[in-house]
Length: 67
Image 1 (tube, rainbow, N blue to C red):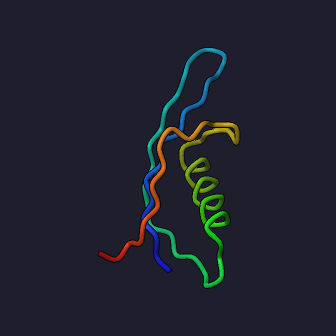
Image 2 (cartoon, one colour):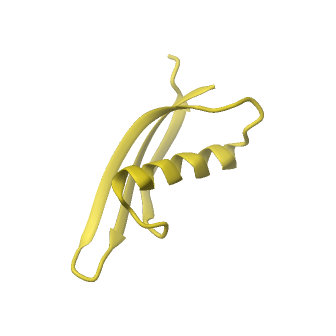
């Protein structure tokens, strides 16, 4: 299944508050749960943004990539 995601993350450092928005398409294997898909997408977005694991999710949408 191909999913489109858009996520905005926010986290604080000792000097500033950072915000990053990432989007993309992720293909998941059959049998993956919604929880697993969400965790995978958030981990990927955090890596892309250079955000720590504790970064807050300000916005998240996950939808089928097919219209």
